[in-house]
Image 1: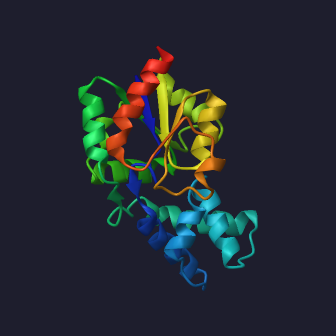
Image 2 (image 1 turned 45 degrees about the vertical axis):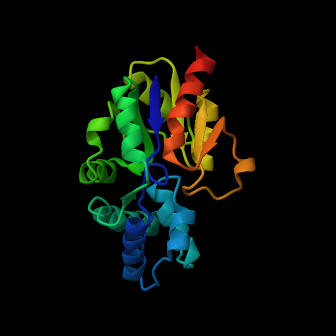
Length: 219
């Protein structure tokens, strides 16, 4: 079975690193930095949207040029912002078990490609994933289903499960016609009851049971 994961808010809590980069960007514009709560609320739809949201929160006028300049500044530091990210408890055990059991693991994230690969390398996760698709590697991003569908194709096709933490991930899975497991301890902004999902979990030790159920349903 293909098990495909989102990254930020699903496998890793990267908000502190993103907060640092976002705050530096705002401070370069003469504005106060981000709180951690603001950072978490802005994550989910890619770096351009994140920068736009934080500029809006500080009343910074947004034109194509000002947004592009701020985004460029943000990205220049984002690739190297890996020191504060932490894995959610149980992630390594779950990934190791899935790999040993012969599941094909993929990553589908709106995080830009260079920061994605940098944090995977920093946290020694690269070897788990047979396919990685990040923002900038395709013309579209989640919640458009193309990224998820391409990740499945890159894994060889077949039975698949998507694991994510947000409304964006849920919509992506729905539009792709892929079962979805919601990690409820991530960056979601709305109640669980308002997010489309097939399973919900708050502890990675529960995910193998969900995978087994998904295999039975689709078999």
